[in-house]
Image 1 (spheres, one colour):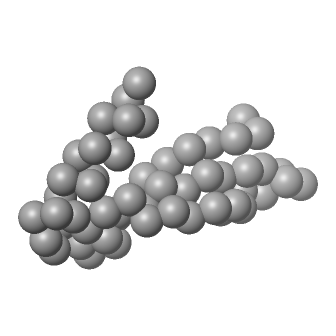
Image 2 (image 1 turned 45 degrees about the vertical axis):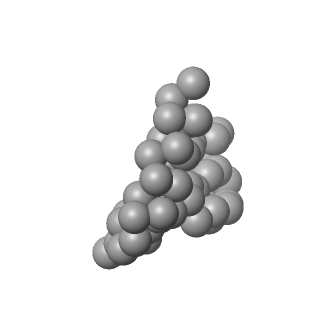
Length: 55
């Protein structure tokens, strides 16, 4: 697989990441914050991001 999207949750923070493979090793190429579960607004951001990624 040359490109693999993913979601990393660290504590309350949710991030969308893209992983690429080079020379047989995986590298996180990009990390984009999509929301937090620490606030109500952040939870809505996470839910909207997940719905967007679903489609």
